[in-house]
Length: 426
Image 1 (cartoon, rainbow, N blue to C red):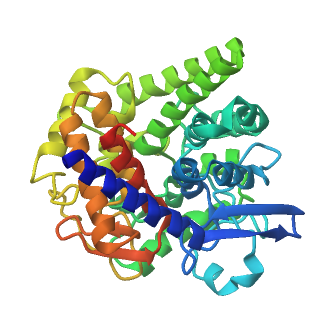
Image 2: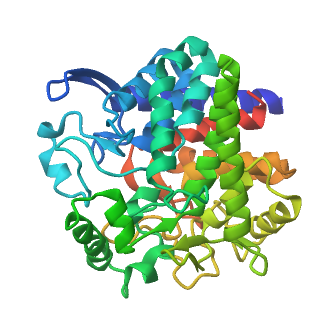
């Protein structure tokens, strides 16, 4: 009977996710680039455009429901790749219809319709999942040239010190816009929307003065962060990219990507792990100083297949501690012990300051299964599904009472379906 109940729950979640993706679907033709587009926006009311890491999450979940649309999601994302290999973190396909929404964003543009920023690079994972669930190697061959150019851009442009760790140049490039781990580095003194926006603008205005030329932005040393989460995802995806090349029979490219993944992983372990704290910390500035704030991203290296057992055990201990990260509805994005922890979304839509987000839960649960803690993985997966079942598809949730915050009908919270399916081995 228990299996039947669980399967019924999975079926209900899949139906709800399919309806969400139907509501959020955006289709049309963009005259500005002469491309058709077909993607799921994060939220029709708040985020009607195509965001990079949202779209990768959407493709993963869509591949379980509608493999053809999952392919369209990736094709739309890659349609406007820049000559240098950058895939913008937002594509404003239908900008002219939503100028009021655009006016509310703090964002750096490369063109009127494309931003000049990255987001966490889980593109290879999305492509591999779409291929595995129906698209096959023909799809991989189709998109691989653009995918390779993108990861080469990250390697060649975003890693000037050649340690294998790529750098973000402003906080929103991590996708964690208002995380308290950046506060001191940005010179933020008060947790207020205007103060945090000013911190972002101080960085962005300096970059505008050098025409956003990457080498010059790095030379300014205004905001250089080798972010643990971004680089964990980077390392995971380089390994996935190596596997894809292996399946294509391109052994030299596979070996190169495997080598890059090993370099990134080695630098994460050597430079970012703090033995005393049992946590990974971001590196800030050319001096690579630790940003010593305990956040959920400090735990994300659990997603690394070759994480040493001692480090994995230390991270798992934090996730099991009810005074640290083991909230009723895990995983809070900031440790409950941190003075800046806040269980609610603050005025001005300040995000990632303590609320629980399902995209991070998805990575952490997968990491726990990799490193011998399936019980804790299942708990996170089940509680994540409970959040959606109780409050709907929201941006984030209160880790104490499960209240939902931010945009409604939020796309990547569909990852609850992936987590429920993982619990059933589906």
